[in-house]
Image (cartoon, rainbow, N blue to C red; front, top):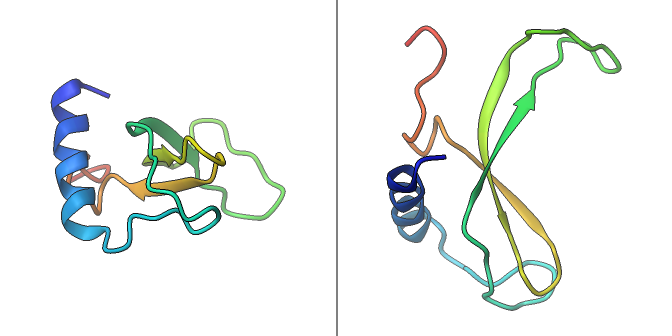
Amino acid sequence: MEESDVQRLVLWVNAKWRNKECRLCGKNAWAAPQLVSLQVQPVLGSYVIGGTQLPTAAVVCTNCGNTELINLIVATIAKASGA
């Protein structure tokens, strides 16, 4: 993810994320978001090569490892396919 996208995402998260304490450990110790691409499967247990991808950012608690996923389309960092 480009640094400018990371900065935009941090601003978006700060505006939207009301309780920044980790749901598992209660700390507010989050690492910078990293890009994750989730493969969307039409059927449980199936695998489609070249299928739909969901652009996502993972924000990880540096204290306990809890991971929160942010949809980059909803966060207006990425555009939906075909948009």
